[in-house]
Length: 158
Ligand SMILES: Cc1cc2nc3c(=O)[nH]c(=O)nc-3n(C[C@H](O)[C@H](O)[C@H](O)COP(=O)(O)O)c2cc1C
Image (cartoon, rainbow, N blue to C red; front, side):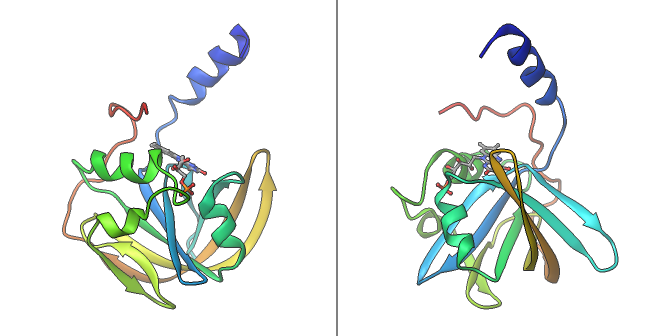
């Protein structure tokens, strides 16, 4: 990366975002990843958008899925963010390592989190090296943890 791109990248990283775990289930496999590129895009109907890199195992599983889940991590859940964000389902069954519940058509959400929701996929479009998926929020659960985990300040280096 040249100096201009590195500076631009550093500035873009200043944008705050949530730390979530996006969950999916397809063909009997539970998958998911840590995602910060997650945002609300409509109140009525309630829509969430997630950006998923096309090289992720989660992206593969989302091709066969009608739904995804979003678990909003709470304060202190850096280990969970690292587990889902630094390891791939190609190598590790990440959901086997955390307490979770299955919602809707068998999708995983974290039991310990600030909030979780089940989304029915309504749209998909490519955006550079990611695909954006827009999901209608069909079920929400308030988790036991309070403040959302902030993106900045934690160490997500491999
Ligand atoms: C804090 C953090 C935020 C991340 N946000 C995203 C994101 O929004 N979208 C994405 O595709 N990957 C994101 N990643 C990277 C994936 O979580 C990571 O590549 C993961 O290992 C992919 O797992 P999978 O191959 O099982 O899908 C993030 C990683 C971290 C640590």
